[in-house]
Image (tube, helix red, strand yellow):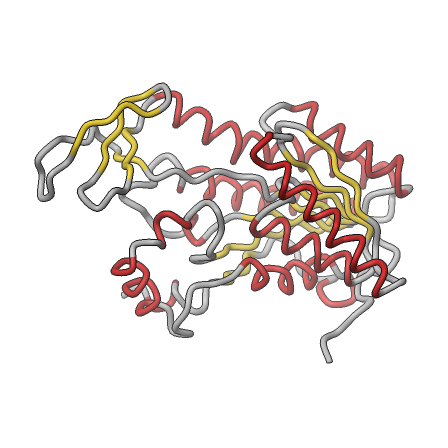
Amino acid sequence: MPPHSLLTGLTAAITGGTTGIGRAIALEFLRQGCNVAINHLNLPSDAHHVASLISLAAEIKRDEPEAGRLIEVAGDVSKPETGKELVERAVREFGGLDVFVSNAGVCQFAEFLEARIGREREMKKRKFGNGVNELSADGRCIYSLDHDLFASTVRINLDGAFYSCQAAARQMALQGRGGSIIAISSISALVGGGQQTHYTPTKAGVLSLMQSMAVALGKYKIRCNALLPGTIRTQLNEEDLADEEKKRYMEGRIPLGRTGEPSDMAGPAVFLACRDLSGYVNGAQLLVDGGLFVNLQ
C-alpha cells in the first residue's frame, strides 16, 4: 500500500500545474492531504486541461476525505506580479504557504545556427508563426534560433523561476516556520544539447538558483532543492518522441529501459516537500532519469 497523509495540513503552490509534471505533482500532493494552488496561462487551448484537473481533484476529495483542496490561478510566470499573486491567493484561501514548486517552463528544439536547406536530408522551407523554420523530410519542424525564441525561453524558464520563488520565500520567511521550495530543473542542466543551446543554460540557471537560495534562506529554515527529470513524456516532447527511431535510441540509453512518465516525478516531489522525510536536505539536486545520466559514456 503506498504511503499516504505525508503532507496533511500543508499548503503548496505550483506554477504550470495543469499539464505534465506539474499536474502529476499537484494530484499527488492532493492525495497526500496538501491543499494546492496551481498556476496556469489561461489559454483557450488549455481550458480542457484545467477543467479535467479540477474534476480529478474533486474526485480525489470525494474518495479520500482527508485529501487536500485545489484552486487555480491564471497568470504568466515571466511577469513578476504573477508569482506574487499566486502566493497571495494560496495564503488567502488556505491560511499560509509551506511548499512551493517552480515548474512552469518551455522547451522548443532549435538550431543554434540558421538551418540550411539540403544538408543530409531534403528540407522544405516553411513559414511558421513569426519566424522562418524548417520542415524535415519526416515531417518534424525544426526552428531556427532567433532573438525572440531565446528571450522568451529565458523569461519563462529562468526569470519565472526567480520571481515566483522569491515571492514564495518572502511569504515563508514572514510566517517564520520554514518551508520547502522545489524547482524543476533538468538533466539538461548537466549535459549539452545541440538543439537546446537556448534551453540548457536556463535549466542550469534554475539549479544554480536553488543552490544559492539554499544558502540565502537557510537562516529562515527554508529548504531549497532541485529535481532534475530525464526524458519524461510530456506535451513538450511528445512530437520528438513520436519519432520511433529516436524513441528506441533514447530507451536504449536508459538503464531502466523506458522513458519516464509525469507520475515518476510526483514521489520525489513529495519527498522534498515532506519535512519528516527530507528535513536535512537543502541545496541538493535529485536526478529522476531512470539512470540515463550515469550511462552517458
